[in-house]
Length: 218
Image (cartoon, rainbow, N blue to C red; front, side):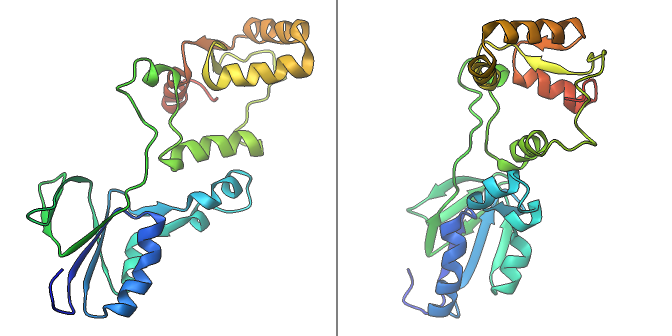
């Protein structure tokens, strides 16, 4: 860090620790040039995620708008994906080629759940992070929103799809039903769904794609 009282500080990632440190950094170094860099325009507070899914909080209550946050704390915000750090030259490189110099850098980019390099992941898994998409889907199923939930009692369920209960979340759901109902009732229920046209697909990714295109409702 420079000997001046105005060091260039890069907060690489809008994780909880970096955001909480802003007020202390600004109080101790009022002249410092502090910049938060993150790929997203907002940060989700994962501690409120269960409450959001349960319907206790709105999505906006769980989020921190990084532009508004930075403005209110007298710092800068750059939206961009960090793809490299040179600790010798003290420069961070963004995906668009921008290089930003720093005297002090703090790394808090968090984690992600998308791992397409693992064979079968794209077909059979749904990443929890980033939280936005996963949380929205989970909340719909837990809250049973009548406007989005299909009527499971109707004779035609051809606009519904389900992953084969051989792995992942579907297997977990069927395991619970097996425990609650027993094998015969579960098998009968499954046969009834197939008779009414429910599509059985290789994995959750295929179901997600049909829902996204509007071919299926759920």
